[in-house]
Length: 261
Length: 261
Image (cartoon, rainbow over all chains, first blue to last red):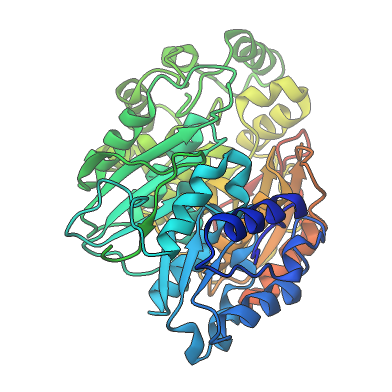
């Protein structure tokens, strides 16, 4: 299902076809609301909320795989949390980008297993990111982010995390390695986002920097690279900078279960 | 001086000429670092910090008028606060947009009189916004935002405020009317920013919505207007929505002293 913007029907179908052909051990079900168009969203707030609860509260499902990010999961998060039943506890919830708001809210509330990983809609980037998830659903963990270690982790889109910190949905990430990635933001905006998140993330184990992709050309060069930006704000805030990470808005986006992998 | 990006020399000169011709009661001094180009910034962090302190700690000046916003005042705010002396207490600090980080930090620390209003660089929008400030410096308050009342107020660019909330620079705005404006952000991003700030602004008297200008065209319509967005998040968070305000990235940008006008 799609908590933000809708997935194109042909992309959803391509994922269903791939799974039916190569992953007979899995059964994928597309929520009918996932392809609805309502302004920016896959249906209005009530529609997306109902879709999420339809699946989350159905004990027949083992996981919810988000179809697209975009924007909008924050608008249904509070009502979703309030209406989750027992069946929601045993599930994995997998996606990234804007879906990070829901993943964070679920993690904060100890609901199920939130997982940062490719969306179903990432079929537009090729089969590989989608196969990574289908393999993971099948028990093959080859798609895990290779730098995960003995410390708990969480992964977020940088803007999504910046809008999440300090809110009622923000999980306690004390002791966590936090992986961040961004797409289509100017480097000065990335710098500004790092200022904000490092002010809010005292007590974490460190930050790892995923891809910063599709940076728009500005009227002037920023003068620092994405790594220099991360190092600058980590040093300023006393948060360890732990190097690069293989997450991002691309086909290389790996799987990061929240907590311990 | 410029805490973020530099002012073009010809614009600075135009303001100096206007003041010399029509405001003989005022003496404007351009800091030499204000026109320096260093990547995105008007000089590196040390240069901009030194420029700010040169003026803030000089008892000969009654006010610091920021030349441009852009981005970068957050990078010098902590060191600036730590180095302010007695002479900084008696000054007005006037600007907006990215300068809101410094205005907020000064307000939090009870330093001087922070004021949201046109930048010197707004001469590019015509003489009127600049005359509004020169008049205010001269004791003529015609440029005050017309909706200011008996309640304390503060005004911010929406993104700047969103990056400020929860940080060491965020002032206590309990009981304040908070005016916000935005430029060049998609409506979904405005919606996301409202989610974030309303989560952080419990206890304020209400929000007034300034201009939301130069909204880029998205691949799909958002489906709600800027007023509907403000009303939605105010209702959801229990913050009173108090209507429109005359601030924004345009020539109509009025003057909002922090606290009581």
